Length: 113
Image (cartoon, rainbow, N blue to C red; front, side, top):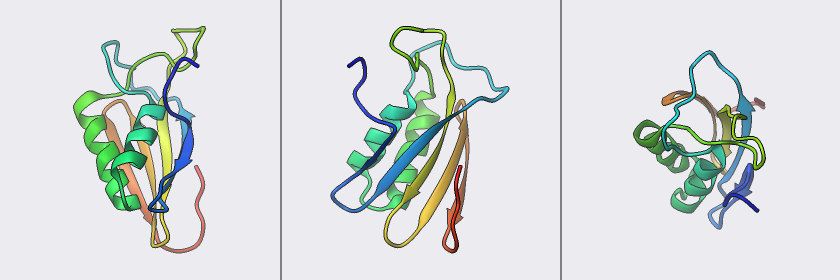
């Protein structure tokens, strides 16, 4: 009830995104930024393929960063995010820390976070 978004979702084009909390040595930003759930929602809204959703999320991440509380009643609870983005043709694992990111294309076999 305190945020708009979710940790996983699918859109009308068959793009599916899930995210998971990760903790790193990279300090969290203290200014305004986007939550992982915001990035999932925006990737699904704007991406018609997994690659397009990846590009949406990484460009927003670079521009706005990650910041904000990740729990309604504990503003000190913060984390970075990892994502799995898939469609019928390919998949991507996206690891993030602050505004930094790296993506791995998954075209065969299986992968998890």
